[in-house]
Image (cartoon, each protein chain N blue to C red):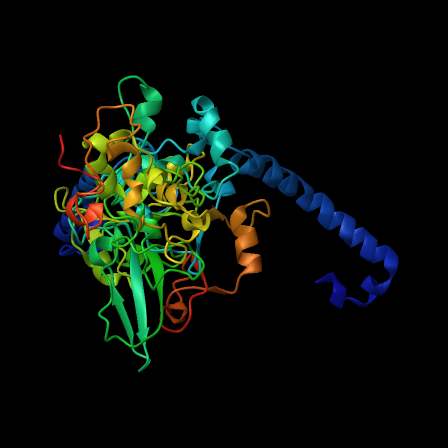
Length: 261
Length: 247
């Protein structure tokens, strides 16, 4: 470079080389910005929806959940999930921690029909409800293992399943550390929570958030200060499920402790 | 010239290679769907297909457009944060065709305990009842307005609690008599029924105004001579006053 030459130390020469460099590179820079701008600018969807502007996530306040199971019920209605047990996009679990520090978890029919009374001889230390659903991981194992690219992370931060492309190999069901997936018994494709993606695109909340009577579920966007999720994340001590797996889940729990994580 | 430079044994290999590549490209053109890879290793069109799924829950804003009276009532109540569709079920069909599709209205006793039935796992402070003991047999909405739920007003009619007696009295000749005709009821009884009891009559004279021979009943009440009838017994030792057999 010119810097190594002794005369380049004089300020005049440095300015000259700078101008030379500039005149050589300026057309390229102008061309770069001129070409780059149309590609990056704004909405590429007809309705003015720009997926790049969104990064959806959910918050769940365990202190507020009453285990009524309305979320699981609404999820099944909204997304046409089979009514049988074992098929859920979202469900509620009951944690019972006994005095011997053992955590017992049950979820009869996802909590839709309520929870049976506990046997009288159970020594309960504490007990609470935890709603669960797909965590929409940033580094989703299910996306990684899908052999055909049917499960993917959309540009607005939602993990989706391409129903017409899925071959039903169940690899994603195996890979999900949160047990958030099931094989649709009629379609024979993997199915899971989509954050009610079709509702988000219409500006509506996910069905489970819509019907939650105690606002235990908060839905919003990461990085938008006007989003209710932003406030939720600020004012609560937040934990994620299985953070040590580095899946970067985007369902944030408030009030979850050792048993849940 | 060409044969000298290009080894003969590579010619069939090269032909095979070109054929294989062509077959691969043709197969790829058929097998890889359109828009695959536009934004990543997935079919870009599938995002729009998923977004086209029909909406079942209309959302609270849709309800507000028509039912502003209930919205006003609910906005000041304990249920202000409860979306309409939490109880009334999915209502997008009702929004599209209000006259043809009606959302569900859970009037039975089984629905409210899904939230308000006692369950030790629920957060403390959340209002809960023991469903089996809390006015069994009565629907919740008989006492609580689900749109503005508060503790119910103390019932002033006796039949709210004494239903069985009221049913008997209803088909008896005593149907027109107020309970207070015979029972003295302290005011506290309405608020604390067990500590302030309603008093039962102790004096056989209670029946006398109507049933003595010199009675003043407006109706044709059977009359007896109180001097000679019964003697050592009180009237209600033999006659059940809520459903006297004289009919």
